[in-house]
Image 1 (tube, one colour):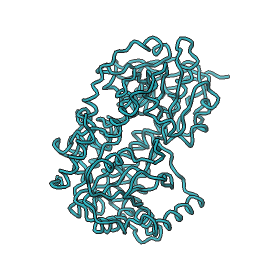
Image 2: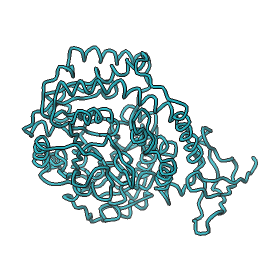
Image 3: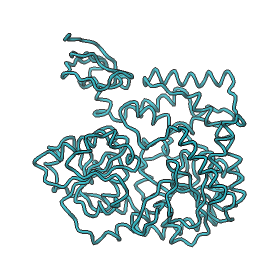
Length: 538
């Protein structure tokens, strides 16, 4: 076997390193499972840079994630500024604000984070299922037969089964149940399906909007032709993303598909708004709903977003720093607490970001108050970091100094793929939860500690007063505020965890993160907005 020495430049921080090993470094699409002996590393470039070893995937260094986790974010923002991406308009549409989040997610995935949610590569069977949903929507829960209502809600398609046997939209159904609002609820399919029985009473499905738009696009009735200058601009973005991040991003196709879908669906959404004639529209997850929000703004209907997950300065669905803006951002954002509006530059004024609380969480804390706590350690998984965290969970389970029952809770987006992607969990001596039973909040109530990386659920676990540990891997920077304030401890090994389990005194201020009296606050705020909400004009 031949020993090889070579130089390699990290695509994130540009530091050059020389490594020596029995195999050359694997990059791009080459074998990612190749192993090397511990590399010999020399430093090149700025004198104050710390020595670091080259990573084994895609030619980026360990430093990019461990020592400087935000360097990828910083480089992406520099790219945006260099190319004035927010000034690019095609068909009078500022296209970057609509593709920014997905472009960055694609880059992130190439640099070591996994797939957040299960995606569908449509085959004949899936197309037939889509056609079945479309036909059913003609006669059942037809959106264009919805009643006129003061509040039009576009909820979250992923529902959670509760103890009453119904599938809840956990962000909206508590409000439908307790608020005296004249509302109608619309839902897109989740993984080509709708959960039933749904808790939501006034429920309509959106296949006739979404799929009609797709049919029209495939028939060529919504074509958008890009001129030479526009094509040149988009290819320039592609080339520079390739050069700076070593990632292929098909910006041209992405923009064409975006504009075609918009051209098809915008009139369909406007027709729906004419039918319902609401005073306000309420959405959960605004990014990805830009065409609907544009239709609302054209009709003079203010849009209100309900917070659904973590919001932090590096979340490109919400943060628009400096001159960056988003014309299709909601007019109001209702957050869970004051914390979520701190340090984030939203594209709307501060007074339009209103802390109200999280009704579903607050009611669940009361519901599970009498559950007995065990010596149980709960791991909170996510698709983006599931591989790293699940391997760490195995290591913890095998570590003799940790005498806890280990429960590994998968994210719903991992339920149908974990056995293939994390095969080491299949026969592991720990409990894997791959369904909505038992409920997550029941697991919180019976556990004494939790380990996570960047999940919203970690904050919810803190609300249940769990001792909290943040596993140090790509994505853990999201929970850095908890570490800084003393509500959680950063760990990188089983030894770290064993040394601290049972000894952390949390500094977590629940009311700062989750406003109390949340149901009353949210109902009152929505009622007031129904009466006096206005469009935000930039």
